[in-house]
Image 1 (cartoon, one colour):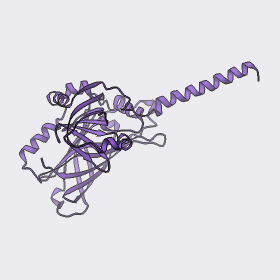
Image 2 (cartoon, chains in turn yellow, green):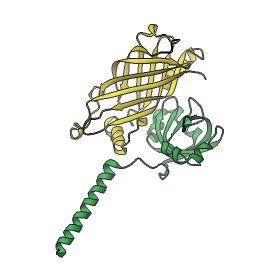
Image 3 (spheres, one colour):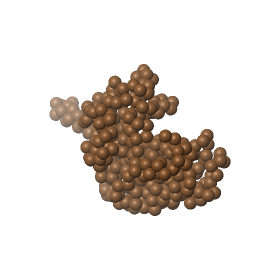
Image 4 (cartoon, one colour):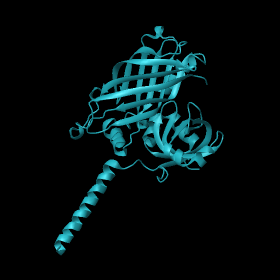
Length: 184
Length: 142
């Protein structure tokens, strides 16, 4: 399974009129942390592409696994080669919906709580995710953030016994994006 | 101190130093220095992008995780407090080279002179393709 975000984007942009119908970013941030008292495991990806459809609150995210950067070079190498197999599965994709979209007022420049539900595809495995998100319309754009927890096991990511105590089973994921109206 | 004790001590010191070196190399070594790394591929940005737009899977097999040196025209820049990214070929469906922040901080004379419309050579790691092809830890070669 290889979701083609490019085709998806082209379809969306071709059926919507230009301007305010889609909010877009290609510099969204996703941070994950699976630290334990024995080891700090923290990676950041600042090149996440995402769009939000104004008509119905549909949300899409796509990030390249190799764009997750670690401070430690060896950790980054192990993450890519041994755990998440980025050569085989180069992308992580989330496709979802803001369930209470009708209650979100984009004209109100204040933080509003959103209920997010969707499917995260990672390491070739898709799982349903639900989370609380915050949407804050400001300066013509929307600042959005969200945090949730996933388990490596759910995505069939195998962690060798020898390092099992150093890597947390539950991985905290936090997402931060600054959407801007899409203008081409 | 006898000669034997001295030899044992020297061997011990050398063994500890070698062990510390091996540990450092294995666990603490820094990321590749892009300025000193020879690229796996050197090509024009248009040719590189066209390989990705024609067949992403084949392009990933060839370029993913590799060090690529690309020459092409700058169509846009992403400048915040410092220069973040150089965009080649197309704003949305082109190539985004995200610069190594320490390179930018250490080379203000180079990065401040970069402007849209110039032809540039950048080197970095190919992370794959979303709407555009992403090059990370990039540096400016010339």
